[in-house]
Length: 151
Image (cartoon, rainbow, N blue to C red; front, top):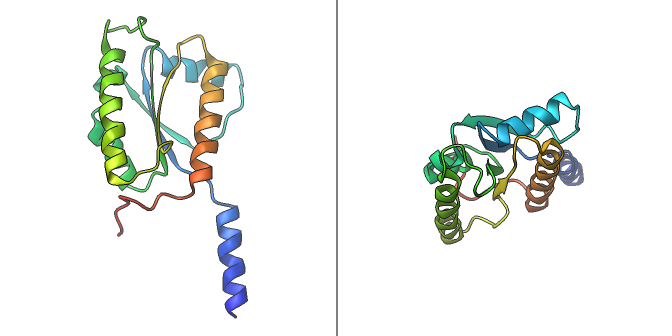
């Protein structure tokens, strides 16, 4: 009986797929995701997308809430530096992300569970690569256990 239960747990962890929340800038990263879809570029279906006006508008609390809600990883993606529709929003996002990284380290959240990227509207292939990398990184870390709110 004990061995059967152990086999069930092993099978469950082998089939485990991470749940990843992606905050995408409307003007660049979301358009890059759209281009990937229109171009039929394959990427893992593990992400849930929240479209935001600018990556600079992401409050670090949003990221913490995603982790608390049971998401295994979070991606924040915005315009390349110097290409922001709102002039300096991506620089604001970059500064917030540095501060957030320190908070996550303090809380014991593994680096790699929360990632930041730059993807422009014409980079559908790059968007696909970013999603594959984030999914692989989070999959290596395993299911989130820190900060996750239990029902």
